[in-house]
Every structure is written in C-alpha cells, then in structure tokens.
Length: 160
Length: 88
Image (spheres, rainbow over the protein chains, first blue to last red):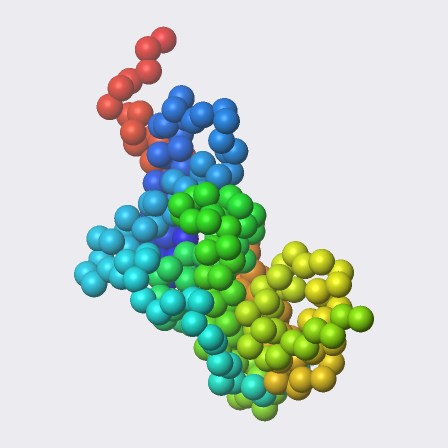
C-alpha cells in the first residue's frame, strides 16, 4: 500500500482499514474463495478508494496499451550488486519515487506481484483481469520501473 | 529441425515468462539463445531481474513496522469497541 499510495501515513491508514474491513466482514467471507485473494481484493479496493479520493485520479483502465511494442531506452549494463550503491532507505526512496510516477494500473499490478508476492492468478482475480492481461501489465510495469531506476543503478551512475 | 528465430521484439514480449519461470524448456532455450547473441536484450533482461529484486526488497516490512502497524490496528479496534462498555 505504501508503494501504491506513495505516502507512508496514508498507507498505514489503508492497511489498518483493510484489516478492519476484513475483521468486520469476516462472517461474509466465503469459504470457496482463498483468504489471501479476499484480503488482497480488500486491500486493493481500500488503496484504490484512497487514490480516487485524490484530485485527478487516473482510471485503472485508461492510458497506454501494454500490448504496444516497448522499446527500451536505458541500455547501459547494471553491476552485479546494484543494491550496494545505496543504503536500504535510499533505495526505498528511489523506488517509491519511481513507482509513484507510473500510471496507477501498472503500479497496482507491480505492488501485488512483486511487493506483496501475490500469485498471478490471485492478483488477476483481485483486479478482475484475465491472467494474460495481468501478465502483460506486469511486464510493462516492470520495464517502465527499470527505465526509471536505470539512471540510478546502471554502471557509471552516481550514487548518493 | 526447429528453425525458430527470435528477434528483440519477440524477446521483450516474452521476457515475463522467463522472469517468472513460466516457460517450457524448449522455449526457454530459444529465449536464452537470443540473449547469448544480443547485448541489448541481455542488459534489459538482467536489469529487469535486478529491478524486481530491488523493488521486492525495498518494501519488506521491518519487525518495527509490523509492530507499529499491528499496534495501530489494535488501537482502532479498541476505539471502535469503546462506546460499548464491556459487560461482566
């Protein structure tokens, strides 16, 4: 949720709201569904609700097509351990800034898959997408994040 | 004889399968063969793997963050329950 909302305080509220909603709605949880899928869908909806409350909310569905061909622009190699170029908190700041600039529809998928480690199937179910559509968005999001981080992590980049 | 040539567009479009290890051994061999001969795709693939690693690692919650988020949740639950004094 921090990655989704870009603001730790707002995300903390959203996490708490998520667990409260889950706690309050537990009797409505259907045993057919996986608990993690259900929780993720509440978290995504809570996060998305907060995004909608902000001015200028972008739709989850509009924007550039992830099936258009992607041409990488940053093609300098990265070192074996790019993590060592920054402290953990500096890395987190760089990632937060980069992910915060991505269109929401890619940000949501990246957060579910690569931060929360939700399975492709569960993430697709939580967002009401088919598995191929989810995979296409995930790849595009990862490539866009790579472009944004490359100036900081490619060999020869200036570390802080 | 399989004469399958993978160009850079094919590789980038299918890179997700390789990243998530959701690819048949045969297709994987074709994709890796392209990587071996294409410097640009090799950089893009390698740096995307590292991007995912950095992203995942950056948002790992520390024990302190888990504790503070749990405390926040408990405080809100207590606040919700407070208008209804417990009956003994």
